[in-house]
Length: 434
Image 1 (cartoon, rainbow, N blue to C red):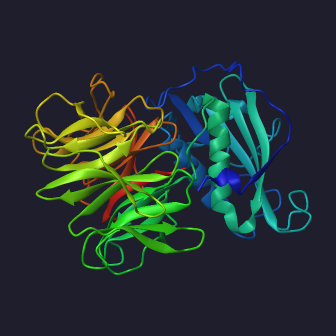
Image 2: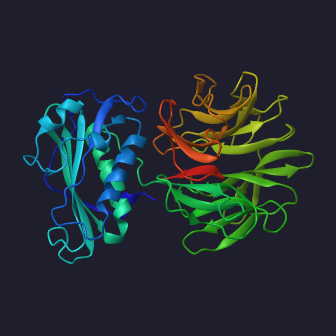
């Protein structure tokens, strides 16, 4: 969930970062070209709830995950006792470490009257500095309920990223994913810091292929809870669950239309598996999109809702194709040999990510919808599957077995910076939630 919906940010003063008049070059995601330090927090009112260390670690983790920075470890910091506000510390303490950007903050815990006279909220006074030039890039007071210290830390990291590079962060976002943590394949919502897993399904069966409607109200997925792989939709507001496609055989890999009215899914059709368009609310069949091509699976809508990309064996081996939502002859996107699967269209419409087996392992690639610009994101890192895009199309989340466990990882779209999300194994089929 987007933490900005639950946080209130009040400026301590207005600091413009629009011109980026800094002594360092603004970095590009994936280059880790700027040295950054997150200083230990200042605690002017103490820390009765012992949250300051957790907040610090989350801010540092988020900014490291972004791929813009090389993080200077806390153990190397020379400035460990001074304050966070301008004039309360010396930039000279950071010059030996060649720190380019510096994040400092005060923690005002629950009960601090400056933060909240009602005593129900905690605050972070955030300061972001150009450490090389000695300038202030941003300073803001962020406030949240005392129970949402994690969300407050993610918001602070987002504000720091905007101040330094001018781009909003994804910190505090979540993914829908399948996990085996209960002993069954159930669907969970898990934060991108790897914590806070909340179950969406609890039916003790096999649940696969979660898909999230763009209004974030409905989740569609395939479940074997009735014996057949049927398609279900859950209303997350009411908790109601309804079956929308229960044809005998497979009802797999749902994809929501951008307006939320329709779902495209793969369904058994005689000896083949083809794509069908159904009405999301009622499950009523609208039209069959593909036919006669062997196995057609894994549909993904273009952002404008006019086309669907999918994986098909119609050429003899699994390749990526496009078809108009109104139907017609599919056109092939990928043109080289190998097995291609799991396409997912970027929100900005410029790329399709997919999985290909080129040799021994499965890897993530991206390509333009016209078939140009093929880019390899992973290589020599175990099996990498199930890609999903961030809302800004700058990052990919996927599953990887590179450390022997099937975990969720996040990467910049160019593949230059990759870090794990989940701490334990047994995860698959993530879907980004903003």
